[in-house]
Amino acid sequence: MLKQRPFLIETLTAVGLLVAPFILPHLGFAPNTVNRILVWGLFGIGFDILFGFTGLLSFGQSALYGTGGFVAAYLLTQAGFPHVVTALFIGMIASAVVGYLVGLIALRRTGIYFAMITVAIAEVFFFVEFNPLADWTGGENGLPGVPSPSFDLGFAQFHFSSGWPLYGFLAFWYFIGIVIGLRIIRSPVGAVLRAIRDNPLRASAVGHNIHGYKLTAFVVAAAYAGFAGGLLGVMQAFMPPDAFMFDTSAQLIMQTAIGGAGTLFGPLLGAAVWLFLQDFLQSALGLGAAWKLVLGLIFVLLVCFFRRGLIGGIVDLFNYVTGRNVHHEPAEEAAAIPAAGKSGADAEIAREVAAAHMSASLSAASHQSGPILEARGLTKRYGGLLANSDIDFTVNHGERRGIIGPNGAGKSTFFKMLTCEVPPTSGTIVFEGNDITGMNVTDVCQLGLTKSYQVNQLFTRLTVRENLIIAVLAELRGKFRLDLFSSIDSVPGLSERVADALTMVNLTARADTPVSALAYGEKRRLEIGLALANSPSLLLLDEPLAGMSPQERVETVKLLKSISQGRTMIIIDHDMDSLFELVEKVTVLQEGRVLVEGTPEEIKGNPVVQEAYLGGVIEA
Ligand code: ADP
Image (spheres, rainbow, N blue to C red):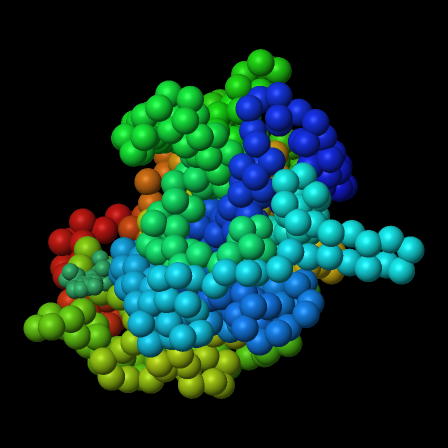
């Protein structure tokens, strides 16, 4: 997803780390300050993957920083372990294992509850370090005497004790950390993490096991924290107990916010600002303990004026100076772009070709006859309210079915049960011969049943192409895969499938536009595209025409017709004329029950429907 020359960022990082010792002293940075910045920066790479890329705000990173740090320091000072780097790796693994267990608990909840659990976990670890484990951790004294790394290469000995020599050692690990971090965020996993950050509900609905990916981000962050914790002990020749303090987590979060979350380098820059100001305000201005007050004010100002942190501010300034248009065409203008930038007839042909590609990838079962979906006795009760009551419903392979009914008839609830977003109170659902009752939305999507939502559920910070990539990845890679280090470009068939999906929903010309810059009708088409992109054998569309202008409706009906080739679809919509044009059979719901089923002609002429649903005003 990040488009730039290969290894450009890695090369610039290496150059930056090499020249830093020659430049930073002139800016007033002491070598030990720079070393501390590097340790915070490395700690922050993992945290940024968790917070900036996955959207999980953890206050518990101190627990993992402390765990890795104390395991490494204990091995080196108490257990007589001779190899510094090996001890650092063991600390990292210990922290990752602890991170896995903590993640299993914390990720059972989302949002503020997740954050509160991580606060509690950080406090528990702090207590355990100071009390039950004091014999191993040194309690409030910490563990002194952590050795510095040295390497004997036979012909020469390298000793990284403190100051600039130690900088070389830390800079090396920071560089490795950045290279790994970049690989992760450029991998398919990295793409899914961003999707989870933007819209976890949709990420799971397009077929990703979001719990597994969140846990992965948590473990990655824990591994970074553990390794950085070990480096803290090595850097100070002493493992301080305050690594475990809640303050450590809070400082990491603030540094990341100052530097810019979702950038990988934000925590490094934030740490540089923080530590520089700390030195400057405390020593040069002689503010003593009051320095935090000034820093607090600066933090508030920075966060208010640079909502994407300093790196975001720098990027905006760069775009402004170089005159780059980051906002793309205004939505109104864009709405007028003809289909895929081609004439209507060309677009139609392109869509047919794309539809042929996509239906070729449908499962063999979709070319069968007989029922693809059978619901029996489907009932949904919300407290005292019966939203759906004893619905029997069958759809055959290749059928195009419409569902109508007045507001509150239970149409959306019915769809939610079919896609397993909500479990039925009673009844069964069989899809392609599998009883899917009680399954989750991810597994059902993987089986080939997806839905487009009544209210758009898009990945709002991603572009149109990136949105579709998320959906196609779920089909090509399954619901969970740990291809953390492979490039997203190496997923076979991804770009072709995304190109087909773009053509199908007429968004090729807008592929690299962020969702926020799309016109409403385009967003609606992308909503359909997300459901369509992983080649479902049964596609449910919940009011696909809702909120569209008459012209957009005509376009979208055409588009839905081409989509329907070789596919089974169930469509809810209030626009009767358009719906009756699209479907072969209609089910009318009223008060949670099936009122009547029939062809559009039968429904139009049915007096019960006219009376109950349309109040007798249906027009042919
Ligand atoms: P429709 O899509 O036909 O407008 P819905 O399925 O949205 O109907 O709603 C059917 C009934 O179920 C409505 O009375 C609605 O208020 C109720 N309902 C839907 N979702 C919930 C929910 N999560 N909790 C409680 N009641 C709900």
